[in-house]
Amino acid sequence: MKKSDLNILLETAKKIGLTTEWLTKTPTKKILLIADAKKFYLAGGSTGFYPQVKRFNAIMTGNKLITQNILKRLNYNVIQSTKIIIAEHKSFSTCWQKLNTQAYTYPVLIKPNKGSWGKGITIVESESKLKKNLRFHFKNQTDCMVQPILDEKEYRIMVLNDEVVLMHSKHNPHIIGDGRTTINDLLNQLATWCKSTVYIKWQHQKLKTNSQTVLNLGQKFDYNLTKIATATYYETYKSKKIPKAIERWALKLAKDIDAPVVGIDVFIPGNFSQVKDFVIIELNSNPGLAYLITDCKDKVTPYEIFEKVLYNYFSK
Image 1 (cartoon, rainbow, N blue to C red):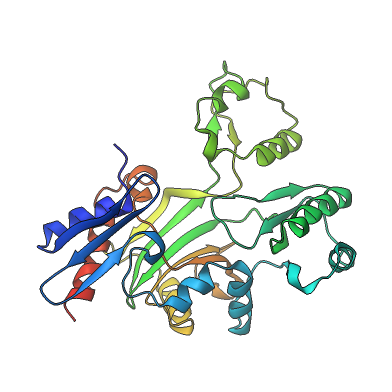
Image 2 (cartoon, rainbow, N blue to C red):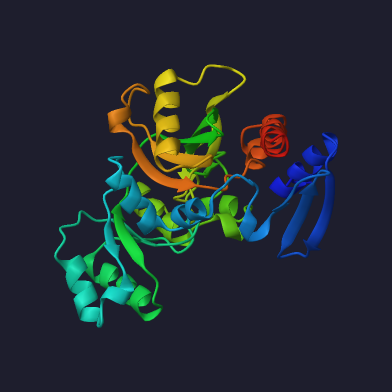
């Protein structure tokens, strides 16, 4: 059975002698009480997993527009974006005028201000489609941004209480051809939630394939824009092999935004030491760890990091 972050946290808390109790446990909402004789905290739901996280950190990282604003003020590189705040426009025409003054190289992404795992992200390949998608956001009063599609090497870096505890590579999820099965049949073996219809369509156009194309043996076909963890590059605090330049950069970023906990998704196009070239994709004040078990085949580190979290909180 697939482990959840809350279950890992529960098992870790019990292991080190803390009291635990499910205050709410339904299919859609779970809140876990963790306590000792003097202190407690609630994990899950809107509170997240980390008791040290400040409320303003959670608000900032949950809003892409605010995140980009703050990072640019602090002189960090972010993805070049055209931001659309719907409330600033009384009519769709003024909203469209702001976008229409920009020179775009298509295709581009239009993405909602809030959301994860690629939800709501659309790949648009022409001005007319961009206008149609912007009209959708205007009608639904959802702030959004337009960005180029970047295909750079992506990494997740995690900072916890002034320590870089994790760094790993990420890649687009993909199917792999066997020389016999069509793309459509391979994709049908996957859960619906993890596939992006828009991205699959774009991949077909880019690769000049269709749903009935049979991939060659070993040939890859990406099915989602949002990248997932991979152990191609994988280091934790225990290995002591996380590059020093990465550590200094990540710790400075965490200090600059006053974040005791932060997951940093970042494009690193070249050498790890060339921090001036790093481009921040997004930040996460509540980084999950359970995915390390399935995606990176690491059954130990999620428990050890959550143990650090609990010891740090309850020992003070």
